[in-house]
Image (cartoon, rainbow, N blue to C red):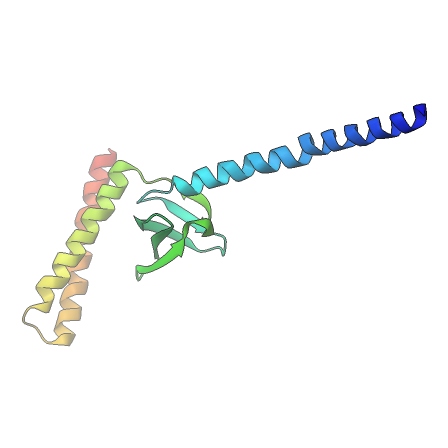
Length: 144
């Protein structure tokens, strides 16, 4: 009779140890991950579970829209696909990037007005390069 009580006590003790060493930490990590995914904001740089590095440009309730690559391709994906937030959006860097996007868009619109297609592309490239240099100089001055 004493042996069976001892066996039950060891079994209960084993379950308690498993709970504190395995189940509880896993639930804690899951809560942290869900909080991180819910806290993703516009401007954050993320890595998806597929290994894609992207920048968040718009958030929705269940999904986010991210910008990928040099061509700035936009992709809509579910929030659960975010693996980690690499860099949270910061004020002055995001403003500089937004200013660069606005300059690039305005240059493209101006070039589209009255030139043939070949000349439009050349003009956009030249104007974009000039604007990039101006933005870089402004960023360098701001950093100093």
